[in-house]
Length: 625
Image (cartoon, rainbow, N blue to C red; front, side, top):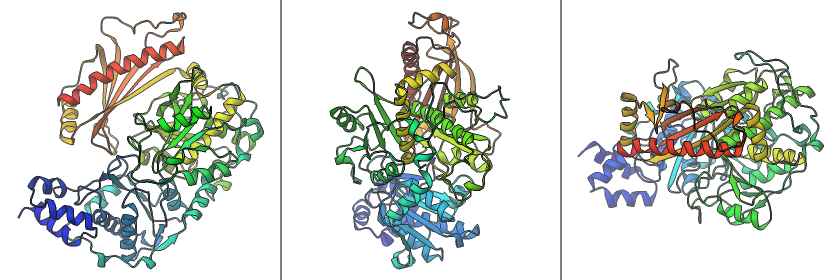
C-alpha cells in the first residue's frame, strides 16, 4: 500500500462528514484520485489556505481544519501565548460553521481559552476581535472571493495581522498527518465561549467607523507640504482650506449596495447608521448570506458579470453609485455612472487613489483640529500625540500613483510584498506613526488601524463620505481622478491572469528568470528586478520588468490630442509577473505613467491599448510553458 493509499484509509476512519466518507469510499480504488487528494498537503499562501472542498489534505474539510488548528495551538503554546486565548469566526459557505466549531473545540481541548462568533460574520470582525480581546491567535474559516466550491482558513497572530514567515512555516511544520485528530480529541461545545454576532458587530463599528463629527470636507486644491520634504523624511501634511465639520462634507449620495450573497450586509447597515449615512438601496436577492451564490457567475466583484444586477438596480432607481463587498466583506468594489450613462467599474488602483486622497484629507483635518490619530482605532489612541508622522503602504504589484500622491502630500509611503499581512507590517514597525491608508490593487483597502487587515466595510463608509464631499463641489470620482492626474501624473494600470496548473506556472517563471526577454511587444526591457534575489529576509516569487519606448522610435507614439505639447514622450512602463497565492493561475500587472497627460481621456485610451498589447504577449509565455 502506498503512502497516499494508507493515508486515505486512515482519513476514512476519522472523517466526521458522511459525504466526505462516501467520496473516499467511492474513489479509493482510483490511484490518480487518491494521489490528487492524499499525495500532498495544503500550505499557507498569500492569504491563508484555500482549496476546493473535498476529502484529504489537499482539500478543505473538517479533518484538515482540525490538523491546522492543532498545529496552531501547539505553536501558540510553544510561543507562550496560550493564556491569551483564541477567537474563531466563519463565513456562510457550506461547511464553514462545522469547520470553525471543530477548530474551536480542538483548541479548547488543548487548554487554550477559545471563543467563537456564533454566526456567519465578515472577516474584518474576526480580525478586530483578535485586537479587542488581545487574543493570541484568530482563525477565520473563509474562502473570501474564491470559487463557490472552495473553502479556506486564515490565521491571525497576536499582533492582529495575518501570519507571516517564520510563524506560518513553524505552523506548517507542526501539521502532523501521522496522527489524525478524532472526534474524541475535541472539547464539548459548552467549553467554547460563544460571542453573539450582534455584539461583535457593535464592537467593530465602535472601533472602525469614524463618527460624523470627525469627517472633514474636501476642497478643490489638494493639501501640499509647505516645503519640499526630503524623500526619506516626509513632512506632515498641510491641510487644504477650508476643512470643516461634517456639515461641509456634502450630503451623502444615494447608492445601491450588494453583499454578493455574502456576510457583509448586516454589518454595513450598522456601519452606515453609525457614520450618519442613510441606508443604501439593497440588491435584495443578494443581501442575505447564501454560500451557493445563486445567479452569480463568480463570487468575486472583480469578475465580469458579477456587478450586473447591482448596476441594473441602480439604473432603475436613477442612482449613479454602486458599492459591493465580496462574500467575506474584506474587499470593496465600486462602479460609477459616467455622464453618458455608461457604467465605469473603478479599478482597484483607481479606487485606491481616490480613498488615499480622501484619507489624507481626513488626517490633515485631524492635525489642524488637534485630534489624535485614528481616534476610534484603539483605547490608547487618545494618549497619542496629534503630530505623528503620517504613513501609508501598498503592495509592489499595485499602481504607484498612491506613492506619488503620498510623496506630494508629505506622507511616508512603504512599498511592500503582496498581501495584507505585508501591507500592515509598516503599521506595526512604526507604532508612533499615524496610519493613513493601505491598499492592494485586488480591491483590498485599509482606512483604519482598528483592523490590521483589509476591510471592505469601513472602506465603503469612507467612499460614500468622499462621494458626498465631491458632489458638494459639483464633481464625481472620475473628475477627481483627472484632478489628481494633473497633480501627480497620469497612471494607467491593467491586470491579466492565466489559469494553469502549478507545474506550468513554475516552469514559465523559471524560464523567465533563466532567459529573460530583451523586449516585450517591441518595447525594450531596460531593467529586471527579481524579488527572489532581494537581500531582505522576506522574498517573493515575483519578477518586475521596466520597459523603454518602442524599438527604433525613440518615443511612444504621439497621443491623439490637440494639446500634444504637454505630452511626455518618456512615459514609464512596468510589468509585474507572479503566481497567484490563492488560486491556480499566473497574474500579470501592468502600469504606464505619463507625468503630463495633456488630453487625459485620450491618453488613458492610448496607454490602455498599449497595456492590453503587452498583457497579451506576456500571457502567451504561460500558455507555451
